[in-house]
Length: 265
Image 1 (cartoon, rainbow, N blue to C red):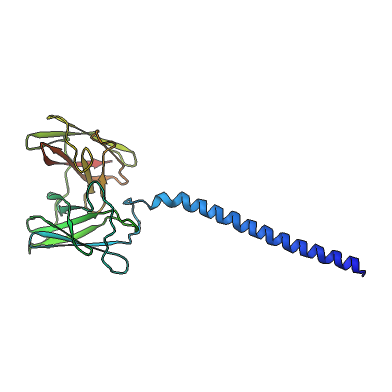
Image 2: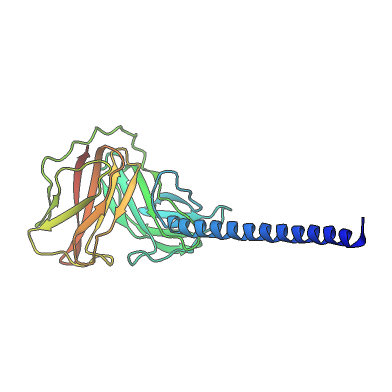
C-alpha cells in the first residue's frame, strides 16, 4: 500500500471521528436546550397551589395553650423556618374550624420567636382543625389540616351537613346573597355575592375572602376575588359532595362571616 493511500485513509478516519464528536456535541446541546425549555415550561407549576400530591418542604404544627394558638414552622432538617412572603397584608393566615364545621376563626399569628408564631384566641373545648396558610420564599408548601384538641371534652362524630335551601345569610344587620345556586363538578364557577347594605370595605388587600372545605374538613381552598372591587370569586370543585363555604366581608370597620353549605353534583 502506498504512503499516499495510507495518509488518505488516516485523514478520512480523523475527519469521521471529528465529525462524530461534533454531532455528538450538537446532539447533547440540542438535548440540553430541549430539557431547559421543558424545565422552564414546568417552572410555573412550582407556585403555591393546593393540589393532591403536592410536595411540602415546610412542616407546620399547631398547639393551644392558655387561650393562645401557637404555630411552629420547620424545614426538612427540622430547623425553624421564617422565610415567608407577605400575602394579603399578613405573613400568616390560620383558619381554625371545629370538627362539625360550626366554629370558624380566621386569625393572623405574629412572630414571637424563631419559627414560632402566636395569636390570642378564645375557643370552647372541643376538637378542631387548623389550616396554616403561608407563602415560603424558597420552599414548596401545601396547606394540610392539623388536628387541634382543646380541653378534655370527648370527641364526637358530627352529623352530615345539610345543604342550604337558600343562599342568603345574615350577620348583624348585614345580609349576603351568594350565587349561583347550582354547582357542578369539574366546571369553573364564579361565586358572586350581593349585599343589602352597600358594598363591603377593603379587607386584607381585597374586596373579601372566601374559604372552602369539603364535608370532612380535609381539602382546603382559600379564594380571593377576581379584582379589587368585585365580590366575585372563581374556583372549581374536583369532586362531588357537600362543601362548607365561609365568605368574609368588612362592613363599618368590622369583619362579618357568612357561612354557606352547598352540594356539588
